[in-house]
Length: 263
Image (cartoon, rainbow, N blue to C red; front, side, top):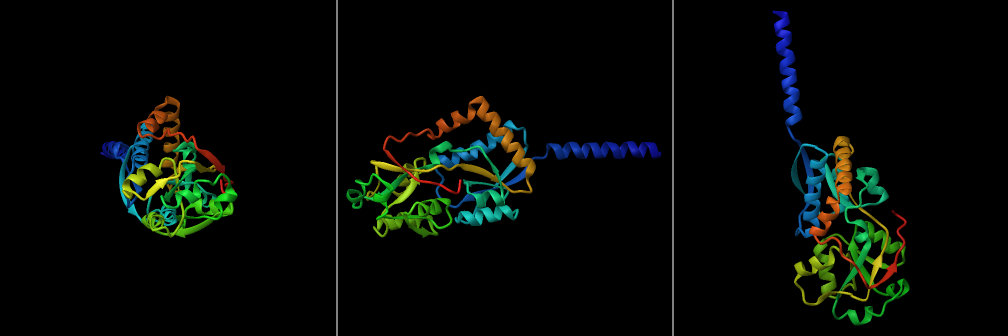
């Protein structure tokens, strides 16, 4: 009887282990409460493909987050969110696990300027960092870019609300809004404001990267994501996905180089 009972218990333990192995892990992924662009859809598809490539069974649940980047990363560090993506900085790499595969290559550091058409005649002649210093930029108050621009001696007005930055440019209360080459065109379309334009004559450039960040308690998830991304890189699927979403843009305008001491 004891032997039979032992066999039954062993079978139940084995069955439970099998069920657990087949049950997808619930992963909470931060989702910004704004218009989703192709660059966002690329990240969602990339995440799913990377986990599948690593054979990591996960059920993704999107959690709407506060628009402030730093608050989202703090939610990540406290376990309220399991995964998010953002531009990197030393502070961000301390509070979560960075998966150091640049998701947008170097394009995230190629910044075109969104301006009001009335400002363009004054700003188009700029060809150096010093020439740009008399103009005022807007940036998110908790974005790494704000510190980078300030470090290089540029005047920056930190703003807490995403839409307000476009409004300030449209109302000519600030001069320019630097946006990555992968962001600017789609955002202008979404703004639908004929007074806004991209300066075609020059752009800003600095070294940086955009990573997946994983909660420190989710080491297995971080390992799987790193493995999956490596497989997608090796197979060429990662590059194909970037092309699918138009993330292979090129800039032919003059470049004004900025130093990023935070990368």
